[in-house]
Amino acid sequence: MAGASSDKIRVLVVDDIPEMRENIRKLLAFENDIEVVAVAGNGKDALECARQYQPNVVLMDINMPDMDGITAAELVVQAVPIAQVIMVSVQSEADYLRRAMLVGARDFVTKPFSADELISTIHRVHKSGLARAQAAPQLGPMLPGPGGPMRPKKEGQVVAVFGTKGGIGTSMLAVNLAIGLSRNDHRVAVVDASLHFGDVGVLLNLQASRSIADIVQVIADLDAELINTMLTPHTSGIKALLAPARPEMAELITAEHVRSILAEMRRMFDFVVVDTTRSLKDDVLAVLDTADRIVLLGTPDIPSIKNARAFFEIADALSYASDKIMFILNKVDRRSTISAKDFESYLKHPVAAQLPMDEAIAVMSVNKGVPFVADPRARTTALAQAVFQLADRLTTELEPVADIAPATVPVETSEDVARKRLGRLFNRA
Image (cartoon, rainbow, N blue to C red; front, top):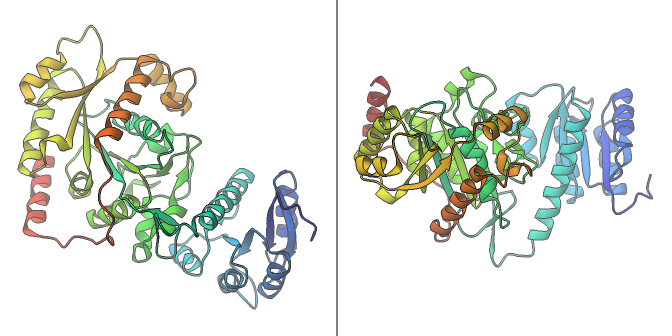
């Protein structure tokens, strides 16, 4: 095993159950770019193997006799800096995750795991480790995060997508816009802030065990590294922070949590696209307050134009600059009896873009879990091209801002209290 190829990801498997060690070894043997260089049954042997074989990735079971996996992981990280530790456990409690991250673990998988989940985690963690190693010498244009990956010196931009009514394609626009923004090597994340019933995971065909609720459980340790372990990568290159798997978990997430998470994420990405729910509760107001641009989505009908006007009135009461809001008209076709000019006349605000009606493409995209801008058969359609144009416009308008300062959580002021009251009044209305 010591003669492993340098082109392969060298993996050390640590588990006190011999059958589990052997099963993982056999599973990984089918991967051409992964090689198990050693196995160990306890923490002491794991440390010796790590020093001898210099693995790229260590699969470390938490529950082991004599020396638990978290203690062993800390010693391995100190002895072999190139080793990226993935903690493995039958338990997924937040305390285990927090303790593992504090000692330097890069990810966490819960037994029983699928082959795809384990292999994708190994690839992701290894790639992240290589990126950190390559970025380390480049201290001129980059700033190091606290215990985490290197970050861009300029802050990224937060784009919130808000719908004037339900069922008009807000989530679909958010995921497609995020992919559109990722062109030209932009680093982009999409956040599902529709906390009770988010659809971003479905639209991207992502199945993940972690969500924004998991960050909140360890919010005291919030940094770029922690957030990165909670993100789910998509084949398009963007990363997604998904809504909680169970609606009741959304009640644990406060507006202050949302502000802190977005403040950290804008330091990690060039663009953070946030899909919101149709309300003005405190958590949604936190997103809108933070956003550099609000993409307000409407459709050519009377309820939408009425709600759009109400939104602009509230935005004015919240002292949002007029150019912070970009009004987009969706599902436009020749049969529409209300035109963009009618909206502009009634709202006293320009229509920034019109997205054509294409039910066939939209339905196919939803059913397949493939955003139409990422589908080779759909990306040339008028709808996809309109989203690309919108992404290009946002890229042009949102110039990088000044150098970042340490993220702080705003102290609640009388204006914040007024916003909360306004949100509650709006919801009752």
